[in-house]
Length: 346
Image 1 (spheres, one colour):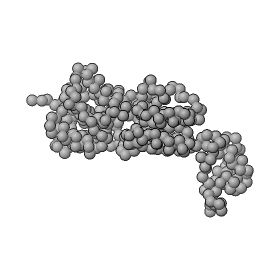
Image 2 (cartoon, one colour; image 1 turned 45 degrees about the horizontal axis):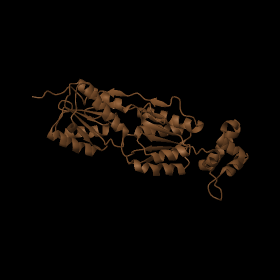
Image 3 (cartoon, one colour; image 1 turned 90 degrees about the vertical axis):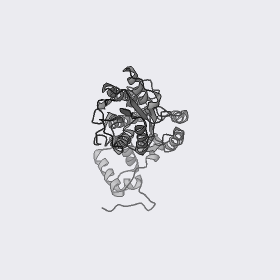
Image 4 (spheres, one colour; image 1 turned 30 degrees about the vertical axis):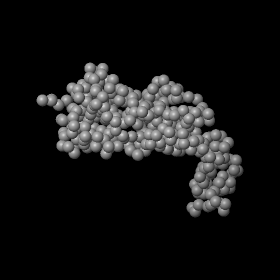
């Protein structure tokens, strides 16, 4: 059937009501409280809306009931695989609940977060999910002053001032560090991103160093390196490291850096893990299928995304903090072929 359009532009609830042979008030009730509209009437309205190509104006509804049906998600980056699975799961869960996601990235520059939050508030978002705990006060105050629900995702702390859904990143560092020390490695290099405004990376490196020290292995400062989340940069840094003073193992702050390190080993003809063991954190897509498969700590990104979406939706609809306030999502060490016993040094 050909879709009919209003002469004034896009069809509205008046056109839908006329086609469904109901009042505009009934159409409005259908979209705001469908459970109070009888089944046959709901079917007629749904068919009329589809035939007309009607699109619900959630922002107009927000003027009356405060709800826009939109949740904001602010991430440090969408430029690589770090958050892709979590974002996909978060968005899919919202769609299941007839909600929409607005996503924004600040490129690991927290000074940009205020502008991002302001733009989301202008669109009357119903809630915001932020990554981690490092944030400036201004955007958090803006959200609090407007009673917009906010949660932190990806990292976990039981003393977080706002609800959080995430993994213990310090434990992720401990798991991978303990694994390599148990394999006999005592000359381990650590390649992590800048930790100044990245609580996830900061917790991981602290956990890795703590675990090594607990197992009577002290890591000298010259074995700790900083590298951005970039395969090419990680490869260049690793080549320089491996040429000058090759360690027996390298722990990487995430799988992206670990991929670059393995590529560096391949380019230099070094065997992984016979000559150098390499481990990451994240278990991103592709890590299992590298040659060799990457040993890493699996962050349950999809589960974090789904639970975070459910949590912020409940908060936006009820105005009540979640119970429990914080959700810890368990990690697991995935042992693959990129790590092995420490080589013997002549």
